[in-house]
Length: 349
Image (tube, rainbow, N blue to C red; front, side, top):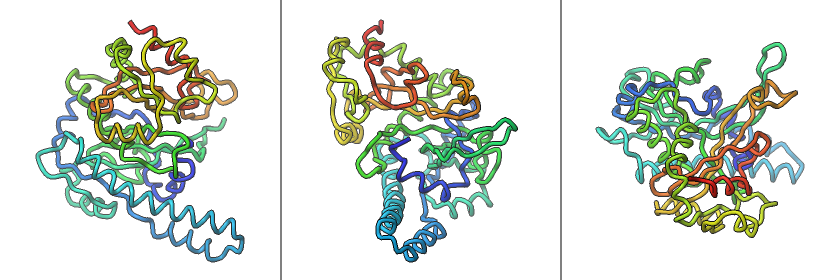
């Protein structure tokens, strides 16, 4: 997960209390979401971890290696920038397009403030929080080891069902969503658009669960259903493909040979601006998901949990999926669009 490789891995220690969260968790039933979506909402902010900062500062002061000192100072700066940026950006994203939990004003609280509320009346609130999902490998004796890979995740759950440090965190939370992200992004920073498109998809997905009483209905299931309905419409619009999501071996001229619709390859910043402005445009995203290798047919790595990707085109304003594609196993290991995605869209009927 190279987008957050240099930045978000810094928070494995800081956000350790959430280390059991998984992708595509929908433990709540359709009828449960009526309560979840109507309770007062608390959005949990990220607070600087004093121990983490102090440890980095000590290592900076003790090292005599100029290059290593510069690296550590960069880590500390990136960490502080992320905390500040996230807390500002989640407020902006919520203000732009959060439709649930409207009966009372949305509150923004730190982790410690949430814990104080939890002690008094946890059953009165829904919590939206950013966590780090950790991927694991299981050895022949059934012992799990952290792979040092994480994915940024949004958890939306009744407060009593998302207790930190709980070994059964994954089994109790009502809902979680792996956030789409971009490789090789400038400064490895989180964008408001990452949060905004995630919140749109989360709400669309939950509405579908509620309206049609869906059971065990993941975001991937929802995206595939939307694809069946909307993929045929793509040839009448222009597809905006993020240049950072185009495989380096795939040329734009090759795409034009096999796809009869219109494609514009534009920058990550342009895609982000379109999402932020909530424009009626169809943009590319890659949704990560985790899968045990035994389910992927990968011999020798049967107990390894891997990150894979579903390549999608979504409406930047509504968050509705227009296409979603999961290629053969090997091609799912990277979030990059290749010719096969466009061959598939070309065949939509």
